[in-house]
Image (cartoon, rainbow, N blue to C red; front, top):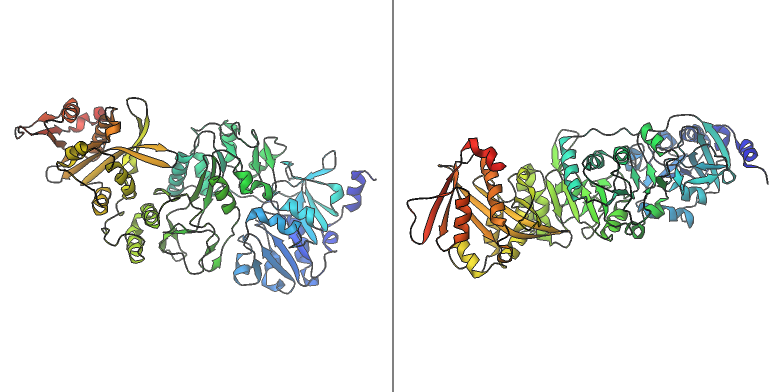
Length: 628
């Protein structure tokens, strides 16, 4: 057996000679993403006039793709498993093909011969002392292609990082070597906007210490990573990542210490980014590259506890269907790994599958359209079904859909659509009978005042969230109301209520946040919230004095909920420059009277034996003290 060094020398040749053995009618795989073997692509394209019906297959590539040009349509036929910008026009002009498939299942097409490969053109690092070349920044489906193809032609690029994991080919496996020394393709970090930063913060709030993350590449994943500076012990098990991971690794926030699968290791199938990222990956034992049949296997993904999967969408309809691979009838990208990770995270203990998208898009002609839509565009593909969707996040908030009815889904999604489109979406939802036809047209239209959301604790240390009520809280309010005693109901409404029907509940959750405000105290457990108390005010616009009303669930009374609501309502009053509060309290309600008087409410002269009228004047110069 010859030493590997001799084999390497014997098989070392020019790019032109290496591709000269490729014949008409054969199928050629090209390496992925930023690891596209550019020298080999140039060489096979230059030989295109001598070939006929040669099929080129690959997932996304970032570099050139001259084989998809119209002039080569009788020489090459491209088949994409994920569509990139370099072949998008060819596919939509039917000069190239698109095969929709889960990324986890592409390798099996090669391995079982359903799509047999004659050649694999790939990029590798120079061989190490033992004759092993690393596939560098793209192992993904490349490993399976190399192990299935009859011949491998490798571009040995000195600038390819030696990545570790299941990422190696031995010199003996490779038919021809072409040396190069050229920069890898790079993907520059996208610019952040206020929209992407808001989405990043919302998703960051969903991520708990010890979570394992999957994220894609782009402005939203980078914004999420930038929001995690206060987290601890995060891990990575992902299809891909970019430069945004590096600062969190360097800060010790991503350390993979608490991962339940491959603790201490970042698991990835490919990376796209800048030279800084490629230098970070070179011989880094913390990072293991694995093929997509492993990284994207939902059963493998689910073994990571607290798996958080973050994936993008082009549009989401009001029932929760996610289109992510086409713009109407025009194919845009691919299924990729979205469904793999959405399903894997859903089956993970404490997992969170998340779909994230800006609420609007701007068309080429400058028209702004909603990406939360009544119905998907004609021809649009459903990548993630309504049954798979859990969280949907836009810059306007978070909608949780799993286990929710169509009515609840429509309401939740309209509430996170851009305010300019909510009335239109609500009207469409009524027309489709997705929601009650008697909903007021003003429902869901006001901007939700997220600035009044806050985390706090009760007297016994129970963590709670105090936030404005949302139109989607109708179900929470229903559960809350029917847990109140008759006495508590009477004190709140000054009459006995046998029921609180849907129409009345909708009035209570659909408020304008100006003349009416309602803050609720909720206890959150995993994906469920419990309403413990609510504080409301109704503003007299002439006097700028608002009437207060509090209700606390009987089993949560005497834990400081009333004090908490008062503190936060005073903060709201100061922010909105109210002149004061007033309340009408029955004289046999000593708890409420004591609460108000402790906040310096004074009894007014119009009080009687049954009801006290108490008033607090809010002075602007004391607001800082109130908020403290």
